[in-house]
Image (cartoon, rainbow, N blue to C red; front, side, top):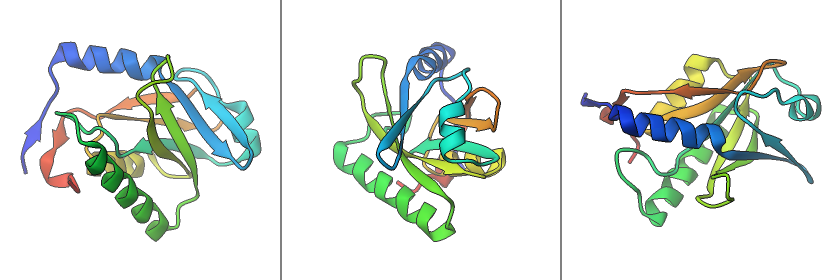
Length: 151
């Protein structure tokens, strides 16, 4: 199993971008906005659970994936979530200007280890994870392991 890390300057850049990003979750006709380090009472009230994880399969490090590769990875993630029967809602991440949109899923009632394993499987450098009534947390996942990638 090959393991790789991300250079410290790139880690800092990515962490800052993820912390500043806009996250939206669709709950029926209502969309909830999430921010790292802030609680999510509106979402938790509308979709009660004990924990929440937001995972995407887009743009895996160390390089940019094509639109086609990202679409395939997103579909594989959706199929995997369906197979496990986890409660999910569509989600989206974008930069603070509304660009760089990445579809993903908000998953309810997973442990941090389950959520981290799922994100690592799709070669993600991070995910959002939090427990009910606590602020939305950013979990960084470096180093990554090539053998866990579905690509």
